[in-house]
Length: 451
Image (cartoon, rainbow, N blue to C red; front, side, top):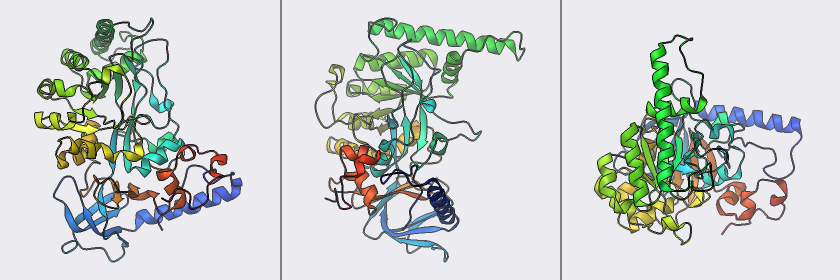
């Protein structure tokens, strides 16, 4: 119906001959170009724009990757040349924004130092990883892909669109000046406490971070004093350059933190150095919600539905989202995939509502709030004219346990279609659906995993 190119000829088994693959990719590329040139109208669904009231019997019109119009069928004109998609009985909402994910298996910093801001996920992300297709099956259209949290500072994150791409450049989100956008991953608590050169205590952890920011401030001042004179400029330092971007608020800090005292340490450092920060996980944020609200710092919450994990997360509470919301904090959600499965991301909002968060706040937390945390709310997070045509088609209410993601669209192209047997496997399969190698496709018929 509305297919798209895939990144690998091995998707269904053995590799196709090079010539046949090239012809197929060229043909699919032409189809995609045609789809972008012709307006597409999605008619009949209940639409949740997030930025406005729900629209029953709604119409969404997209063209060349952007939303052109949205409104009730009675007042929204569908262009005569548009390709019509009948989505009556379905629900349509913005694509989900995952503010903290590890899909693509990225590794940045190594064991040589607890603070390595020069390392980039950009240089370590596998866009052909099966986790990206699984995230599409969960309705995720944008993700902040991070390195791990075993360091005080483990490197630069990257914001990506979950398109079907062959290289990282196909997925990376660019700013107006063409640079690839992302944040900076930091962590505290037990993850970064180990043998030297890593810290052994929480106090030493904060001291190391503070000293590195002071050094970056000195580097920044040397550059400013040089006033462009090459002879007065300090030697180039990639780590300090990246921290200067944080100090200049060009790069948001995405900070792993769990315990209430660790959360307050982050807020203390934020006040001292003036960087922008999003608090992630925040298992005990409910204990210090007023302090977080006073600092005007957003929180990206993880909702785990089974026991286990680390001791410092023992205070995790499903009520956190609702408590933070009532305190006036901007609340979003993340999967931390593979900690929770991207395919089940919508459950985070459902659990939060069950525990006291408002329905509207939870749905915004899956979309527009996350976009704001990534400085991307001008492009994504809600269905409004001029924004990117990133949206999902659901079988029913987004918070209902039986609801399925039927289609996922990124910039006007369908990247997941549950009616496609192979896409259905990404949504329903187990181990085999996570392994793109040819042998994993040998054991399943076309109907495998249908129910």
